[in-house]
Length: 320
Figure 1 (spheres, rainbow, N blue to C red):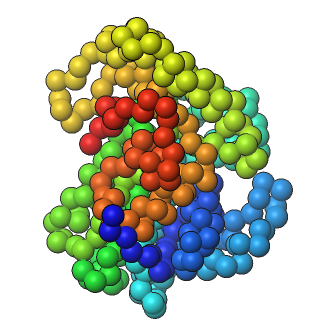
Figure 2 (spheres, rainbow, N blue to C red):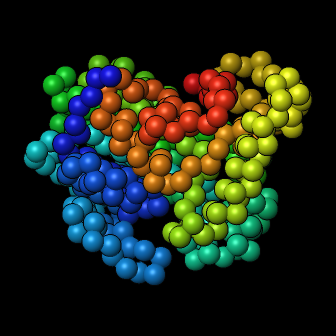
């Protein structure tokens, strides 16, 4: 396995849920970490505390969605050069209101996001659309990287995009996963078109949870884990809810289209949830391992951190 040490890492959205975990994990591996966000503020616990590790991160303000990205260019052009960027920005629901509900632990307020037509579209912040937050932000960061200081072959530069497994439909609008896949295609196409010496990695975690920082995430994570164990505990050849759903799913005639939502539900029953620290660990190991590139699903992420499920089988649900 070819490895290299990522000396300096830029985490886009490092003061967010997953971004902060990536910062913390990268520091533990001896990497120098810089975070950029629209506020530039350090990460704090839900109770407002700043942990000791946060003092070791360079917190910078830069709006990656601005037309003028001079702040981001200044960060990227600083020395020593970055050897990796981890892009963690994204939104599960358009509008972004749900994030505060999750942080505040308000389940009833969060449920409104699952109800069609429950929010006034005229009051939504366009910056929090799927197209802008999940797709355009990633493209902006990569294009700024290539214009600020184009990586050389010797840099062994890695760009990790936080994508997702297709397992949230139909509870979450289709636009969430289509924007994530579009971002992956945009990044890959830009790297190829520019002939850039950039190793693109698309991390596709499942449902991410943390019992303390995101207590609302624990019950659904436990339920999903129960489904996974039931599916894997079934005798070979016996029909299971997931296999039945996949058999009922109508195949798409368009190779680039998403499969039926039934297949997405089946994925939720067979793909285990991941603790946020395990996702961060897998991402940081991907930074160190030059052989990791392209889509990285949950099975691959678990293998990277030395985890596997009993009877683990090759993933058949990952969609390139």
